[in-house]
Amino acid sequence: MKSLIAALLLSVLPVHGIMYLTKETEAKYILAYFAVISGLTVFFYWSDKRKAQNGEWRTRERTLHLFELAGGWHAAFLAQRKLKHKISKKEYQFTFWTIAAIHNYVAFEYTNQWNYTKQAFEFINS
Image (cartoon, rainbow, N blue to C red; front, side):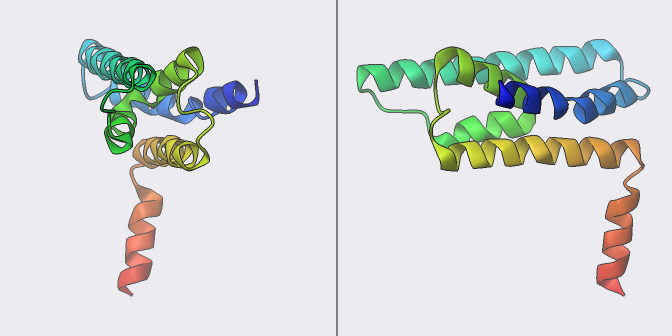
């Protein structure tokens, strides 16, 4: 239950960022992208779980993380819980939640015209 609440809270900024993005791009393209990336993410989680059960060659964890990073982290969260896959691996979960945090940071910065990132670069360059 705690992880569901965390996922919901971590969805607020990315959803806001996506809504902000619809001002520049048609919503149907954004929705299509997230539908495809989410579908692929769930497929790779399901496939890896099946391979694990059958003792077959597994999908690399970095491949799963790549799909999460590409925008499928919500689908990955649901697949993890539904399939009971990768939820007990602490190192994997650390990377997963870091990716979720990155999505939040990018959404926050995007909706604020990258102000904090610009300030950080100015500070570094001074």
